[in-house]
Length: 186
Ligand SMILES: NC(=O)c1ccc[n+]([C@@H]2O[C@H](COP(=O)([O-])OP(=O)(O)OC[C@H]3O[C@@H](n4cnc5c(N)ncnc54)[C@H](O)[C@@H]3O)[C@@H](O)[C@H]2O)c1
Image 1 (tube, rainbow, N blue to C red):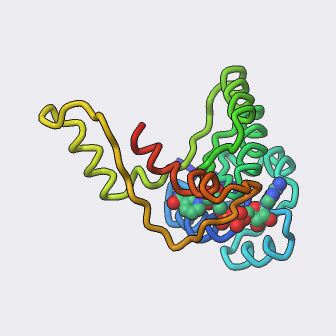
Image 2 (cartoon, rainbow, N blue to C red):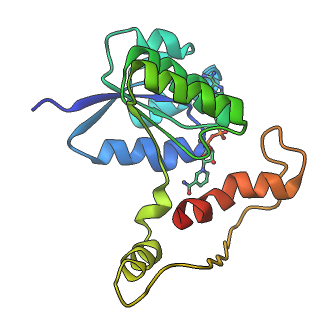
């Protein structure tokens, strides 16, 4: 089977060091195109990763016929734009967390997924972390019983923001890091 051709939207540090480099290590996937509005960064990352097709407009990349799937990683505002465009075209995609910051954006994406079909996933990578796998397995045993309270501690190198357009540092921290704990609870 030919590898799935992936286009990357967003060439920031998490995208390049975690997502795009992981895609390049998987034989089932091929990183064929990159998009970023920052042309200097785009050129540097494309050269470093050896990707020849570059775009500053992600809609052009989606319509190029070059890609089968998308990795969209950046601020939540970019996830919303990328997810909307991929849902409309039914191009499978993955975004980073959080997918959205505002309920109305979540509702709009839900509507698109209902209308066109859900072809996306939010990459809650912490689900695969060893400690979370242990928690998952333990809490599913009969002896454990129902969960009535969850307390989590998140250790991070990052400060208290501000993140994106969120003024309240606690709200910013919850959106950036707390979402992993909320996802684990769910
Ligand atoms: N899963 C985890 O454990 C984990 C850990 C840390 C961060 N994250 C997530 O990673 C994301 C941050 O990733 P990053 O550091 O790579 O991103 P970043 O925000 O540093 O960079 C975003 C890039 O997207 C580009 N961009 C912005 N708008 C664009 C558009 N319309 N079209 C094309 N490109 C556009 C910018 O020029 C920039 O290069 C956040 O969502 C954060 O929550 C996840």
